[in-house]
Length: 196
Image (cartoon, rainbow, N blue to C red; front, side):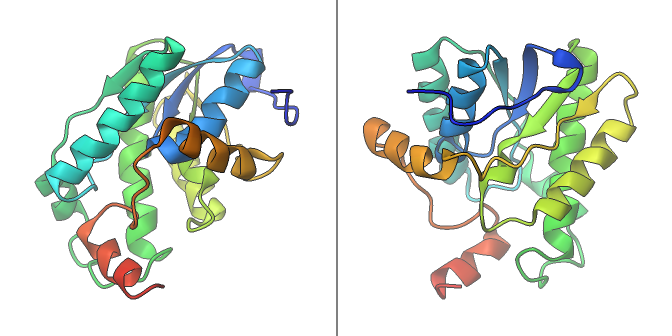
C-alpha cells in the first residue's frame, strides 16, 4: 500500500511509544508509521476496560497484530479498581465529558512514565483515531502527561485523516479483528447499548 499522507514525528524520532487502546484503532496507524520508517512500541495501558475478559480479548488482538508485524508490545498493569477510584464522582458523566478527560490523563500519564523510564523521547496514542473521542481532550491529556517528564514529547497527531479510517476497515476484515461495541469502561456500556 502506498503512503497515505505525510507525517512528521517531533524531533525526527524513528522510535515512538504508541499508547494503544485496541487492535482496530491501532491497525492503520501502526501500518502508516511503519511505512514512514517509524518503529512503534505498543503500550497497552487500559485499566478502564471492563470486565477483565473484555480486557484480555482486546489485549490478545493487539498482541496478535504486533506479533504479525514483528513489533514489541508492553502490557501495563491491569488495576481496574484503582482506575475506578480515580473516576469517583464522574460515573454519570456523558461520553466526551469530564470522566473521559480524566481517564485519558490517567492512561497517558502512565504511558509518559514508561516512556521516560525506557528512553522513548516521543509518545502518541491511538485514541486520536476514534470519531467517538474528543481530539481536544486527547491533546490536553497528552500534553498534561508529557509535562511531568521534560524528556518526553507528546505527538499530537490527528489519525482520522489521510485515508486511515478507510484502511482501518480493510485491516479489520483482513485480520478478522474482534471489534468491540463500547469504549471500554462499565460507564460507557449504557450509551452503547442505547445506540448513542
